[in-house]
Length: 464
Ligand SMILES: Cc1cc2nc3c(=O)[nH]c(=O)nc-3n(C[C@H](O)[C@H](O)[C@H](O)COP(=O)(O)OP(=O)(O)OC[C@H]3O[C@@H](n4cnc5c(N)ncnc54)[C@H](O)[C@@H]3O)c2cc1C
Image (cartoon, rainbow, N blue to C red; front, top):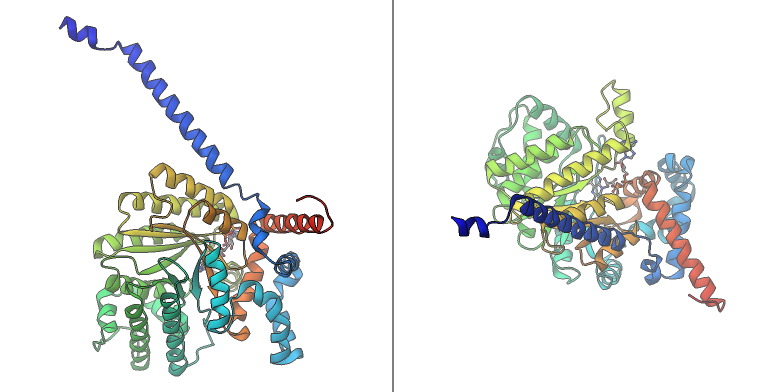
């Protein structure tokens, strides 16, 4: 007993040891956090050394134009006026070397390949996106949807067969394969009587199914659409991860339903089909939690593309016109809290079950990127372990992408391709976004200017 009490350290001693331990741990953690903040400060213009003079000047010019609200707010109208005045060819000649070259990889495989190889050399992974999409009143008929499916299958082939990146990914818009009108109707129906996922899985397998609330033609179109999606998923499983885009709130529930059915069928052993969660929506957190619950109860892996959301202006206008409550968070700060909160939820579940959950942190926001990197370190999530990666759009915030890649994170650049006409709605959204992605674009403009003046000084005989 004596011996025991002799060996046992006194309580105050133990306490001081514990305090020393926690203090030391805190110091190490603080030092690591400082180190992380320093490496991910995104202040280094050398990220742009790989760009040609033309690319630097083009990026600066476009970001400058995007800073004029009159131009950006009316850019859809301005583009269609320019198209009418200049004709299709003239308009294409104007756009191709400018806005198109900044945000789009090209039209054919040769042009796309050149762009992708350059990207791979910089340690970035291309994520191809066919920017074909439809909104209400633009439905184009079964033949056009079949053609779009062929374009997506081609995208799967290109993503897989070219060795551009480890673990290839691509983006897909469901409204390129299924009419927006039907998506809106399905959204209304499932708000009243939810469909069983198994019903949609059976339809994908080609079983004749009846869908309550839809007429004969609508059922036929839904079956065709589901089979188109099924073909794309079958072609991509075990090869290319397919990230389904989120679009407008008046059809998103239908898009999610179809995506969840694809997940149930194809994500048994890994996340091959992913869904997108738009954190500017007030309901985004509950949608994400519901998806996590469903993936558990239905036994499939969940892939999440976490974004803030690209359709804010239109969503707000529509809600106002229809006298509905605005579905978007009241201010950017609320969207930011929502984004960072959902990010935390996902990183937590990934740290527990990395084989079941995956996320792409699709943002240009430096603070969110730093937060994610810090949390990954705290939770012991591998930078390039496959379950967490980062994503930015082609032509936007290269200083963020290149720094992350340099630090060993998996970084994808979303790379749209296609004709000038096909990519127009996408280009209009990018212009609008560059008005709202204020901090990132201002910083990118400053860094581009620094790199330009460094080169000018050097060519005039000054130092670096
Ligand atoms: C790889 C990739 C895939 C993407 N896929 C999709 C997709 O499928 N669907 C989609 O909708 N978007 C998608 N986006 C675009 C994305 O939603 C954002 O529009 C874009 O990335 C800008 O947000 P940020 O986090 O980068 O920038 P930040 O500058 O941090 O935030 C800008 C965003 O904050 C929100 N915001 C701005 N002002 C306000 C305000 N006053 N009140 C509330 N919120 C506000 C808007 O969403 C705005 O786009 C994708 C982006 C990437 C990088």
